[in-house]
Amino acid sequence: MGTIYQDRIMTIPEVHPEHKEYWDAAVEGKLLIKKCASCGEFHYYPRVICPHCHSDKTSWFEAKGTGHIYTYSVMRHGKPYAIAFVELDEGPRMMTNIVDCDLDEIRIDQKVKVVFKQSGNQENPGSFIACFTPIESD
Image: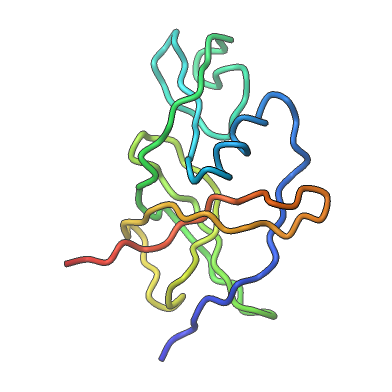
């Protein structure tokens, strides 16, 4: 038996108007990323200005919610957990938590899908955080 993920308290940052829609969508189980109308590139972390071409012509796009683990690290102090950069199928990489799995079975390039965990924010009760879990292979 490996190291099994255990739920832990995760919090969201202070919600600002430029990324409020992202957090609202998370409550509905949707992962939003930004897409630039000028260069066509997707990006994450949500921001008004495109980091690729510096255009302000960005809009929200609902991501598929799937990707693969680009890199990760397992923390074993206290409740064990894994943080990772997941490369979304749309291209951007996002820092996230890998959850609901045996942490010793996590691998680079492993396929993952988004799951939403309720945050522990007392100032934002009812908020959810996008995490990822491995997709079972057939």
